[in-house]
Image (cartoon, rainbow, N blue to C red; front, top):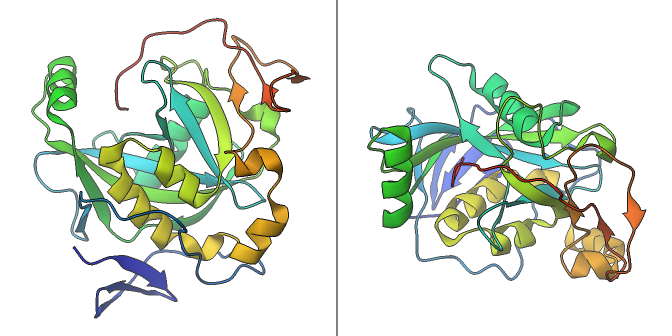
Length: 262
């Protein structure tokens, strides 16, 4: 499938140009294109749909949350080792999708201080691997092939103390650690079957990320190694520096069961 990217208010599919109706609010001084460096295209394709989620796929929203340094919030799942992702979750029937994205962000990260920036102009779908599909469909009592996602870009406007992976208490926690990452790191650390969707999402939202030159100037040693990792405690607490490569760490002392792929 041909790749797409956002240029002005148009989305390009290969050589075909279509009008894009997404809402854009640019960061000041940010260039119009951010190439994803050193991220090979995967062999799995992300399906695009402008007309709505296709049949057989669970309606879902994805949240790309960026901080003032233009880095992206990612979190690692509790029971799936070495798996990092952006927040996401199912949308209820009839629920406004932007409100669903804010709800999922609050439920999974505790974040309420977020400014809407943009909405992807189309739905993106991915198929579950067989074992994941069987497990989730048994749990949900459904027969979904995968998930159809509408992605939203938000700017984090609060303090990091607001981030709490126990969420707002309405749902079981899904994550144990979080970090701010560069776009190519977000793709690199994602589970394989989500990589094509992440590649498309970050291409669409690329006008909001910093240039290569800015990125190289701003990178610290920890950020080149993947950024600071924060581990969730059972309650909000002050951060203490621990002798672990200069990384800022919060220890997780209580975990709860969670669904496999929210």
